[in-house]
Length: 250
Image (cartoon, rainbow, N blue to C red; front, side, top):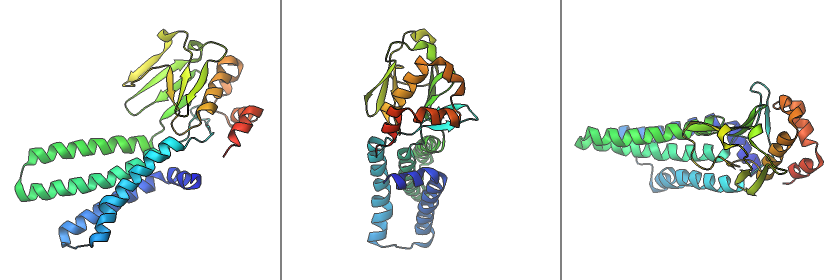
């Protein structure tokens, strides 16, 4: 399963482009040629494939938490991996959106009602734009030499290292989130819309324990922060016995 999800992430643009091209071709072919693909093909395209992708996205979002961080020297930063559930969800909603817009266009041509059509079309286009941005962009938690960044589609959160304190400045609350011990909330910066408690970070697409241990490392060892984002520093972090044991888990 991990291999399939890794393939989805690596070829995410092709996955999204293929879902869009296939859905549009199916809708246009039906409208222009009156071709009846049959009950089975129609069921697959309209129900099984889109809802199957959405279901797979939900399952991977809850179950896929690899103990992996990605070095990005150009930023510089350590990023969480791209989350496959966003790619699968975007593909599923793309197919559903194409089907919905196809039906709306048919109704518009038959009955008029351009304003209703425009409203629904605008809603679906905005929804799909958000899904595609989330699937193709770099979102989630990022560790930089200056602090922690939580990048979401509509906004971001910045927590400088100096705002955290305590012998355990971060811990895995559960498999899906990391809780921070924030000493100085006034130093936390927001941009755009980032809902939720600033002391709680999402562990979406990453192992929460690994992320918490990385934060703990750089809070307590400030001399290592300038090297964050380099392959050498990531290799050093991964060589810590507890981290090696964690990353070796299936």
